[in-house]
Amino acid sequence: MSVTENITSILNELENTKLICVTKTVNPERINEAIRAGATIIGENRVQEFEEKADSLLQCKKHMIGHLQTNKVKKAVEYFDVIQSVDSLKVAREIDKRARDAGIIQEVYIQVNIGNEPQKYGFKPDVIKKGIDEISSLKNIHVTGMMCIPPYVPPEQARPYFKEMKALFHDLLLETQRNDNIDLKELSMGMSGDYRVAIEEGATIVRIGSAIFGKRKY
Image 1 (cartoon, rainbow, N blue to C red):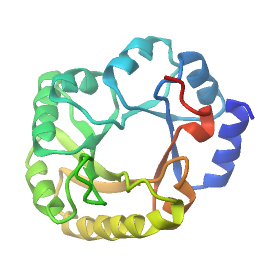
Image 2 (cartoon, rainbow, N blue to C red):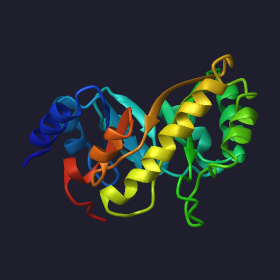
Image 3 (cartoon, rainbow, N blue to C red):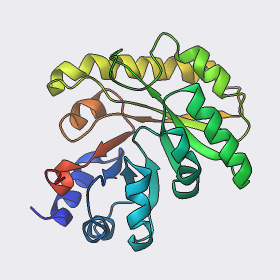
Image 4 (tube, rainbow, N blue to C red):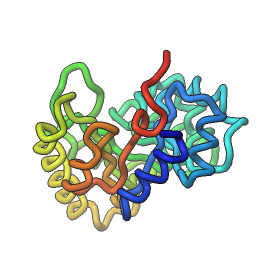
């Protein structure tokens, strides 16, 4: 199937769930095909890669979804509407600093290491409440969502992680209702292999790449 056919099929399936087209290694021509077919949000993993193709893209919202090094934060604030991968206080503070320098409020999601995997980035579930309290004191960051990447397991085996993430999201939503810097609306979880399960467990946004563009070519 073509990119257009894939986008149309997935959008029909998602109904009220938002779609992020993951464009890692995808060239601008194919990204623009997806945008013309109805995609409104793209997600990039690397600032440098996005920088190389930014000027060639049609109008759309842009999300940073990959690990963000502090030396790339200035460019990320310049290019992206939302930074989903706030995975540490260090990164959050640097985003706040660069957003202040740019005179903007940067929209961000907090990344949770829901599987407590040592090789993955993100706040561990047992410290996320403390972390989000500290991030909420930063004046040039507006927290509007949470994001996770579960362990790489078959879709049904990912279900408990999505369920746990939804419960954590709900708890933090209740705790932060009176905080002006936090307005939790989006739960970003689920990718090409498991997005259907993620939606069943409460995802409001799914991040889909290979199911749209095919297998990545490095």
